[in-house]
Amino acid sequence: MSTLLKLLDVRAHAGGDVFAGQASGPTGKRAYGGLLAAQSLAAACRTVGDDRSPTNMHLQFLRGGDAGEAAEHRVQRVYDGRTASARRVETYEHGRMLTTATVSFATGLAGPEHGLGAMPHDPEVLPCTGPPGPAPSLPLDEFDIRIADDGSGEEFVRRMWWRVTTELPDDPLVHTLIAVYITDLYGIDPALAVHGHSMRSRSHRSGTTDSSIWFHRPVQAGEWNLLESRSPAAARGRGLITSSLIGADGGIAATLVQEGLVADRDPA
Image (spheres, rainbow, N blue to C red):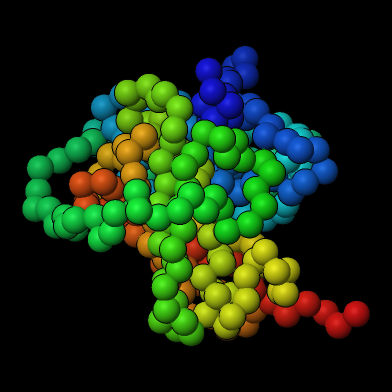
């Protein structure tokens, strides 16, 4: 099993809806938010039937964790109906709550559809840039990441193409978990880029505080996916990011909204 798949494979504790998630390392570094989010979703999914899939997840980052420490995900079964379910997930590290999330599930129903188009560019012609900065907690050898930034000021747009390069199972949930995992990568960067800064430069205190994602269509993590992100507003030391996750067929697979800290550093 690849490192990525091991990280997303939460293990049930004996009795109760409690699951353990593997640590990514390295010890002493801040835990990657995308991993906590993906493991929270994986834990919630382990408590619902196969007839329903996640429609949205809303997650708050309360404290930073240690990348070298395993997390414990406690699931509360909030609601189970004929076609929908709801779960609450709290994530702990040595008794300290790191994140809290709500996840909604539903069975698929027939109805009108839109949000279909075409992939706006061919990622194959782009250089293999990797992430926008250091990412020591991620198995980057299992991803192909290509980033192209466009515009400046409030017209700034980040386009991050990504795909997994190792073999993946056919399980749709695994592909969804990978999408949640990778889309938090430097997710708040566009809010700083509007002002000519970046998370990598450490010019400001920065990091995701809240993350929401709505799942529209299945994700194919082994094919090219495009995360297109903009920042419509920033104030009070917080920036907002809105993103569309577009699949290789041009369909919008997911919509994301993230809020993050983009605060001035205190004078030395």
